[in-house]
Length: 415
Ligand SMILES: [Zn+2]
Image (cartoon, rainbow, N blue to C red; front, side, top):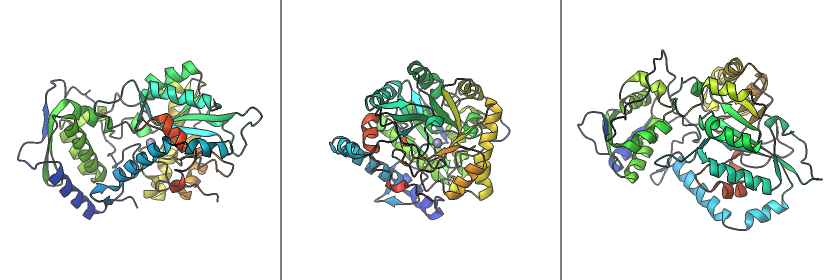
C-alpha cells in the first residue's frame, strides 16, 4: 500500500535529474558561504535507526504521480485550494450553525518563534502569534480548553451553558513545544498533550526535515551521489533552494533506508557521528519530557518509537512500536502513559489491528487525523482530530475543518 515500487523510484529519479539537477562529475558535498556550516554538535552513537523513509507530518508516501507531480504534492495543493475557497465563503458558518455542538481535539506539531528561512516546514509549524489567534477564535466560539482525559467520550457537551470543550495536542515531540508553546499555554492556563515519538527524543531516528532546510538556506549548492547518479543543485536563489529541498525530500522518502542514510551522510559532511545531533535543537530531550510531565497542565502521550506507517509493519513490529513507546515514556516520566496518537493518523496508516494493540497496551484513548469534531459514535481508540498548520491561515482552516467536510477520506466507522 505504501511501499514504493522500484519502477517508480527509477522514473522519479530520472525526472529529478532532468528537471532539477545537472549530473556532474564534481565531488559530493556542499558549497558553503558560511564557515560555521559544519559546526553541528559531535555525538557518538552505536546504532542509528534508519530514517525509515518517514517524515513526520507528511502523509504516508504514495507511489504515483499525476501529470508529473507526486500525488502527495498534488493532493496537498488541491486540499489547500479547496480550504481557501471554502474559507472565503459563508458556507462554513452556515454549516456550523446547523451542526449539533461537539467537542474538538486540535492536532498541532511545532510552535516556533519564527518560520524557517525557506518556509518548507510550515506544514508542521505555527508561530506563537498564530497559536494565540487559534486560542482566541476557540474562546469566541465558546470552547473551554480541557485536558485530553476531560474530553468525555460519548457524552454530550453542556448545552445549558452553550459550552463545548477543546483539547490541544502536539505530535512528535518538537523542542518548540517546550520553549515556545509551553510558556504561552501556561500563561493562558490551557491544558495540552504532547505525543512523543521516543526514537526522536532519544536521537535514534534521523530527523532531517528542519536540518535540510537550514542547510539549503546557507549553502550555494549541494552535490551528492545517489542510486548510481550524481546530483548537483545550485541553490543561490530562494526558489532554487526550495526546489532542491523538494527534490531531495522526494529522494529521501522513496529511497531504501540504507541509501537514504548514505545521502544524509553526504549532505551533512559525511561524518556519521554528527548525524545523531542533526536535529538536536529541534527535538525534546528526556529532560524536557520529564519536566513537562510534572506540570498538571501537561499530559504526555505516546506516538510510537520510530514514527512508522504502522499498518505497513508486521503485527509484531506494530505492537512493539505501540507498546515500546509507552514503556520508554513511563521510564522517563515515572507515571502512567494513557494516551496514544497514530503516526500520520489516517486510514492508510492504521487499522483495527492497531486499535486492538492500543487497547492491549493499556492506552485509554488514541487519536487520528480524521478532521471533524467528536460525535457520539466515536470509539476512544479512534478519536478524530483537526490538524492545523501555517500552510494556510490556521483560523480559516479551523473554521472549514470544523464542518467535517474534509473527514470523508479518513472516516472512522463504528464497529
Ligand atoms: Zn507524527
